[in-house]
Length: 405
Ligand SMILES: *Cc1c(COP(=O)(O)O)cnc(C)c1O
View 1 (tube, helix red, strand yellow):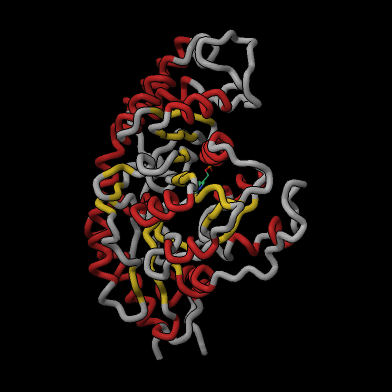
View 2: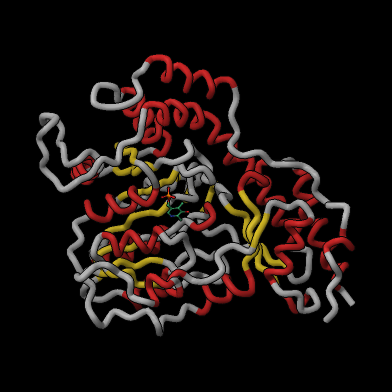
């Protein structure tokens, strides 16, 4: 098939830039004030960190929140606090960022990959039960792209099999399932404040929970094993220094004020863009209405069918869409279990049984999503206006026309 060059489709359909992060004088003042005060961090200056934790817990509707250096550590501390033993199995989806699975290895446990639902790209509850063994200890459902997992089903399975549930809500700040904020449903909820995320301080993370015992343990693990009321050089648990600074906390407190409004805007734009893309043959937005009352659209994902685009490959289509000015790309190039760390058994962990082998793992829905189907539009673009969504749809129609015979 002859493909037209990118030059055939200039000028770009979308000329506008979609800035991220978003900040103003109030953020600058909040950070400068801490800077000038000299109170940048512990031991004696954790007040802004503690206030931010209270604000975030209140926002999520949980009793507690523990901040830490990033989302990966949030997941890792959660898993360890849940009491996993070496060699225990933890169920994870293969269509997610590496941290969801690599922290399981770091905790001396075995990640067991369970495929995603082809309509939502979230872990498929029907497949979870099939993967449960005597060694299964926890499930880490990822609210992928900011859409809530089917938490009623997942919590019911967890209850039946006595498993812990660690919500990976690193895409889901502010998003809701049946009017409950993500991170408030499982045993713990983990968030990242890395620079691409919907709430950011460059790096950072937080864990939400309603369980006092888990809170105390996670609090200790991120603070070199110290305990409430203990002395500075008194260490009860094998923790590490995973604390954030006052500068980060000041910025996050101010950024948090914008989150609800930004989330509603992305939800509104995503819903509208769905209505536009549904009408383009060969483009299928992910399904909605699986209980999510607010979708944070950390990523807007649609499914691409090259047979309706004259055989144009997904990667080439994604390049053309980006060249049209839509902040987009093809997403993960492969399922997590195909990564060298799993294929080459580079576990660096001797608690993982010899027979664990990922060379035969196959999750067909995830493979299709990675290789053929999923195209991502980034969250900052979802903060645009309604007419920007019109232009995103127009860019897709323009590519379709350009490649049609
Ligand atoms: C970003 C992310 C993480 C890890 O967060 P970091 O802050 O980068 O460590 C974990 N899970 C998912 C789904 C993520 O997107």
